[in-house]
Length: 350
Image (cartoon, rainbow, N blue to C red; front, side, top):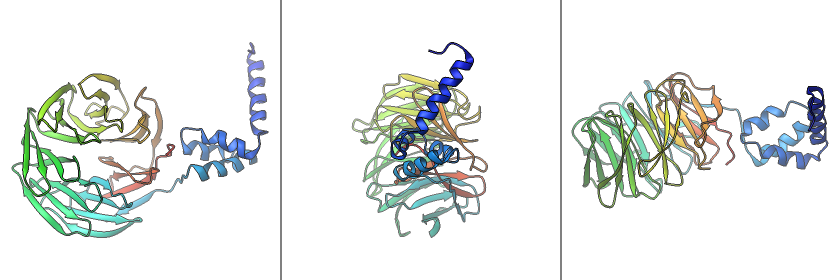
């Protein structure tokens, strides 16, 4: 190994020269291995060799710096979700739901008498559910037809789809309710001492995870309708997301921390400053089972194993209170502070 600074610099220069002398297709494969397509795009202007190789690499790793603005709501966008066909559904303080296709508003629905707090698509993509501060949960067809209204007491803050026929709601009643889409109340899961703020379900539909103002996270067994474990969040827990493996989940708190848990309540990791000490408002797990997006004061892509931040996104205006991945595996949509939602490329290898 070179021992002097000059020798090390000369060795690096020689290695870089050898890299640039590789055939274009081989160099493209080297660039393809970069974690982020953003980095492939960033090296392109460096020299002709890297520019040509980056063009080839980006054909395999599609990426664009374009940000699509979904503007049309007249108040804060509280929730977003994506349909398997690429459409996007947003819900707002303005009590309306909008369905977007290819960046344009396809349909606007006067949905609730109070602000829409959450929307979620049922498997198959033909129906979606919305909940609002008026205590109602509504089942819709994508064409805007209202199929059913389920009225509950109190305020509803979030919902989670369990499978094609069941979903769970949570809110000011401090419990989680499991419904069939025909309106039947299947179970009431009681145990929190504060408002239920966020909900998620494992991919297999076997477990529901709820977070609360009581600073705890609870994991519920859907089959037995019983409590599996309780996690001490140590702050108001605003966001939760399940990793694709179905064995781990993420929680985001008011102090800006993100925690990684096992379903049995074991704390695996604790990461500080992922949201610059501001409240974590949204989390979404990436399909590679190794990374996630965290939203709030900023949006960041980070590694769930060591907390390393791969990228901080600069397209956000205001607070990003909700996040969703698009089915193309390349983009995500977030709320923005200008009464809109925005679509951007995350850049991670699909």
